[in-house]
Image 1 (cartoon, rainbow, N blue to C red):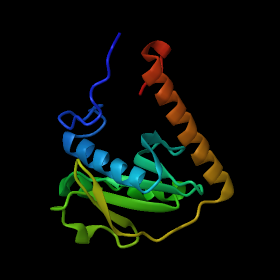
Image 2 (tube, rainbow, N blue to C red):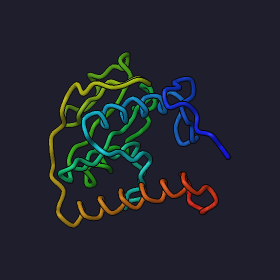
Image 3 (cartoon, rainbow, N blue to C red):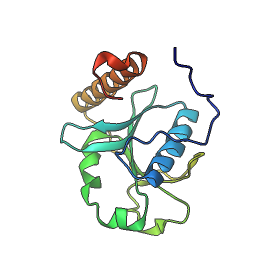
Image 4 (cartoon, one colour):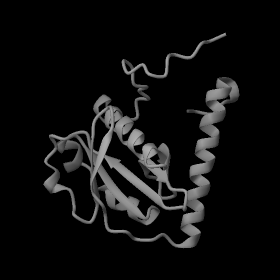
Length: 162
């Protein structure tokens, strides 16, 4: 029987090779903050347009937030796909480290300063409400991804990826 590692162990952050170690740390802090605000979160969620959102958060009222994590200035400058996330959320945020030149983040997007331990919401974005059909599709994608990941965690031989 396997025993779970202590829950307060900050020495290791799970790294799934989908992002850099710096981005993984920012993602962890963002997710901690969003959960503290009462939101449910799923990371690395595939969208209908083929993009994959770094963090998707769902409020109790059904609001859909997407957080795009930028680990460094070069990451931001070389990535023009962030606008492809706008049709899939009510609010879009960028999450960056405190030393990132955050004045270059578009003012229409929200801003989150993060580290491996937590995050601070610095600026709220412009809100663009999703159409009902898109909201339903996002909620179903979110629920299915969460359920598949839980099943993969509970039964690693089930064939689902975490």
